Image (tube, rainbow, N blue to C red; front, top):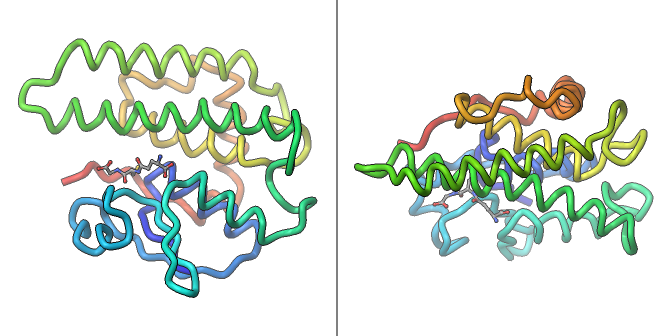
Length: 206
Ligand SMILES: N[C@@H](CCC(=O)N[C@@H](CS)C(=O)NCC(=O)O)C(=O)O
């Protein structure tokens, strides 16, 4: 398998870390969605990462679809999300809130940096969407351990990757110190070797 995308992307990271935790071998191509767009487009016409190219050449796009696939390659007790039921729905909800923050943070960055005249309406809207979602996550975050107990899950990985990216892309808007439970969970996860191995400083698109 080949995983395409850089580790400053929260979407790429949230697929790379489970791949590693599952012990699945993959090659990594840290292609940029801007400078390597011509290589990415034939695999994903949206020119977005992550893309996971399977051994038979099939290209999986969307981080959810990639996780859906690799979760099926491991025994249910190894998977980082319950297979069915309320526990699965609860994990998917936290993942959706976290990846939603990333969607907003990526979009907001483009608005702020790439528009000749950034729209104040869009900036305020994005800022509020991120702040409101962080407040909900803070209220639900665990005081210790991981989101759903002693074992790490896709929720912890999505939240951590999302916060790292959002805080780097928008240091004036996203302050982890204002969210002590999220900050503590984030620090616990980022201290793990697998997070450190699958990280890189935020590189603004050029
Ligand atoms: N919903 C997608 C979002 C992926 C995404 O937005 N990736 C960003 C990298 S952080 C990207 O490729 N952006 C390029 C663009 O949208 O033009 C997923 O979960 O995989």
